Every structure is written in C-alpha cells, then in structure tokens.
Length: 369
Image 1 (tube, one colour):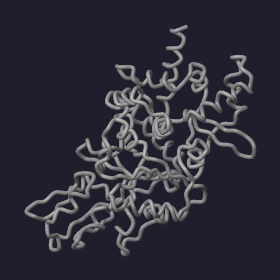
Image 2 (tube, helix red, strand yellow):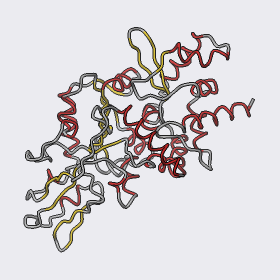
Image 3 (cartoon, helix red, strand yellow):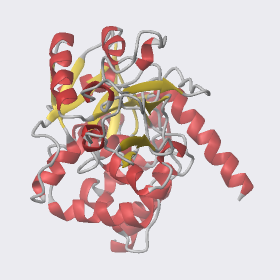
Image 4 (cartoon, helix red, strand yellow):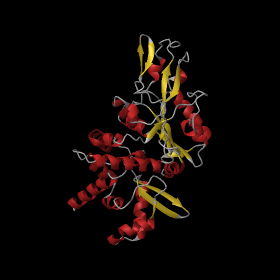
C-alpha cells in the first residue's frame, strides 16, 4: 500500500511537470512532500486525469468522468472529490449555467497562492528547497514571463502614447468582472517566519480580477472591492514604492504589488545579472544629467538595483531596469523620465494564450536539447 501511494504522488509530479510552468523533480524529494501534504492519495490519482487550462478550456464533469469511470467510481463521488479539491485550492473550477467545469492548476500561479489560509512552516520549508533545487529554473526557463511590469500611475509622460494594457488606471477601468483584494501571500510567509517586510506595512495588496477573483471570493481568500477602492489601494502602494507586476496578457487576471524583500518573483529576478532578459517590460528609466543633483532618492526607491551614483550623478543600468516608474514620480528635480524601448513587446490577448506560447517555446527548447 505504501508503494502504491508513493507511486501515485510520483505520477502526479510527472503529470504536473507537463504543464506550461512545470513541477520538476528534486534530489531532496521536496516536491513529493508538498504533494503529500496537500493531496490525499485518491485526490492525487484524480488530479492525474485532469488537463490544464487557465480559464477558457476547463472541462465539464462528464468529460472528466469518461477518463476515470474504469475505477468504478460514480460520477457523484467524482464530483464530491473534485469539489473538495477546489475548496482546498488544488484545482481550477468554474460554474456556468448550472454546469461545473474543472482543470489542473499549476503550482504557481495557482496552488501556491491558493494556500493563503493554509500556511505552515513544514511545507513552506519544503517549498524553499523546491525553489533552490529546480523550480526557479523552471519558472524562468523559457524567458517568457508570466508577469509584466506596468508603470505606476503618472510616471508615463503624455507624449508617450501607451496602449490601455500599459496604464494601470485603464487596466482597472476596462475590467468587466468582479475584483477581489487579498493579503499578499509572500509577505504573509515572511511574517510567519518572523521577517516582516522592510518596504511596506501594507498586506492587503494582491488584486485579482474576473473569474480568478470569484475563485478568491468563494474560497474566502479575499474580499470583493470596487474600482474606487482599488485606486485607493494603488495610491498607498505607490507611496511605498512597490512594483506593479500584472499577468502578462492584454486581459490580465491579477496585479501583484511586489518588493525584493518578500516577493518570490522579484527576489529571483534580482539574482540574475540581466533581469530584462527574463521579464516583460516596455520601458526603462532615463536620467537627465543636467538636472540630476545626485540626491540618491531614486537609488533608495529602486527595487532592482538598477541605479547608482557615478560622479554624483545617477546612472541607469538598462539591463536591470524594468520600467516600474517609481523613481520617476519621486525625483525632487524631475530629472528622470520613462522611455519606451525601441522594440515593443505586445502581450498575448489572454493568459490562456500566454501559457500556450510558453508550452510551444518549451517544446522548441526540448527539441534543440
């Protein structure tokens, strides 16, 4: 029986590793330990029968049942197990016109974030090992980022035409579905280990949109908010100099407000010498040396170590600058501006399209290997 259970978790690891952002095996077995923490053996077995989709391609219960009915499980029992897995934050789910749809969730963005109310040091220590031993490379492997930076409000000058997906106010105003706000998972983890964020006292900063927002609301991971309240939150975030990273699509499902002290993504991005190779951004900061007084305010605000003083004048390392705009809005002499890159990156329409791009890139890289 023990061997059978172990085999189930190994099969689930291999199944999840086929997703756009995979779930790689490690020498320590940290990834198996986490699966055992979250999935009962029966749930793990059913999870291997699901397919992945961020939102549009979730499968109806009846179609999933076709792949598990040889187990002699009734469709009612399958529905009960799937519903419980959804409540545990292990799979994606939606209901339309009385019909239920399900799919696998990736580890991140997905299962990890949905454990907001289920934190303990045991599985988080395994997660840290998992990050060191393989997941960081998996996360950045294709160089197609799940995130893109959008400049903070008022950091883009009027002469720079920006499409709606590049301006945070327009992103919010164009939303049609529900909006939720939740505590930042990364800061909550830092708090749990006794290392509160040194950049902000804010915690309720994760903004989630549309179907994913309903997910958070239903699971009591976040609360519904109006667009007016979203702008109030973003104003507080701007004062603390947090970086706005949204889903890398024209129709994003979230905005994260990141710092390099707690946030998994920004911590990893800061470890590489050329972050712009691994991240999607269309802007970079530029210093007017005639106006700069060398006060150092921009250096303190920068979350990417992209600025330094050279002969008492600020200089920008464009290989590190991700164009967040936080230095622009706080320069006391208005010596900094955001400039558009020569080559503009147009994000895919939806996050489903994004993950299809990532999968195609992974297949090409595997072919070359």
